[in-house]
Length: 470
Ligand SMILES: CC(C)[C@H](C(=O)O)[C@@H](O)C(=O)O
Ligand code: SF4
Image (cartoon, rainbow, N blue to C red; front, side, top):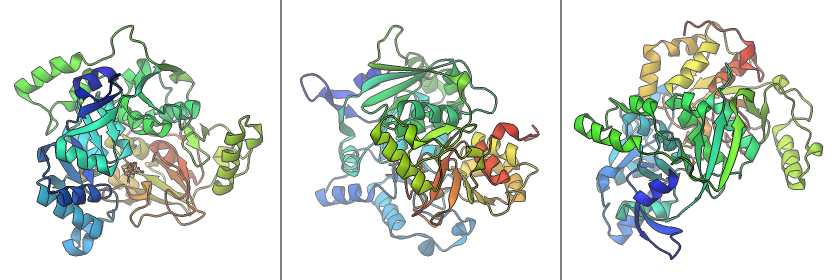
């Protein structure tokens, strides 16, 4: 499937073996954080954007998520990065969702909900989690700022073809285990560089049963094991999700598109360069204990002992991680107390994620000493959640209910974890300092964050009773 996508977008081979090609890119999404130099480059070279309608600008990384931001006068609410972005989009004729737009949100939440991530497209953007669009059978990948400039000027990129890896997920996820746990288990198994140099295709019954939201979580986080592309073949669920999305094809265009989309899959008997098999039935809710997404364990286990690590490099990494995290080997993961709970990010801030968390929170309260915030992935998600009363459930439990943005996922705004404090987080990266200098991050599913928030420590979500009323 990956090869079909690359072949269908190859303008011409750039070397004899066809390893390097000039790749046609269908569309992009731009943010205020990684686009400024690209625009400056265009302006300096006196170039226009070749096809402005193939780009959408979204403010998400640096903005405040405080509800009062909307009421602020525009000038005050916009910092330099945001206002430069606004003027660049205007000058180059690119549609922009600024903070006042009713569809503002995190780029990787906004694109799919508009129906802009479609099967068979190549979408390259200045953000590593562009892999998210693989959930629709689109080849999405992150690019650097000079490539953004090249794309904007020419609609193409110089692209090196990746190797193919299949991750076949047999069986079905047990109750209480989510797509997030599945991808965290995969990353733990193959390592943070396990898919380096590869485009990964996820296959198997467990992937088929996942919702589109769950598939987005999987493809989003595939970049955390080094994949520069993650694909799931589109199926009837994909088509049903896309139907009626504001910018997806409609009428005759949809009928023609469906015909092409149904062909978009790996041929039977195709050979992958690498293949991993994993059994969904064995997966438990996962949490990270370290500072890399592969330093993770099932919630029923304890903090591992680095001394038992056979590879010297991994032992050193684990020792350093435990030092940074303030954890000792042998501590039960469920005994780790938290100070913060964060439900948000392009990995896990869609409606289904908020529902999963609200189900746990309903009728409970955030534990004493835990500050908890919910940052919906987009204003659309926020509205839909409010229509179902999810905001009330969170608020009554003492959680803050915010406006969309990347927020505490990377702490480029004022949502920051203070040094030494510990956060249960539904995000995708637990690097040192990711949520603020000295902050300690434990990655997990949104339902697991909710469980940690209400119990005050990491907690197996399956041990909490829930009413199915949400
Ligand atoms: C800011 C951006 C370059 C970065 C990325 O590429 O992923 C960010 O979104 C992240 O999640 O670390
Ligand atoms: S939510 Fe986090 S992972 Fe996603 S684009 Fe923003 S900073 Fe990157």
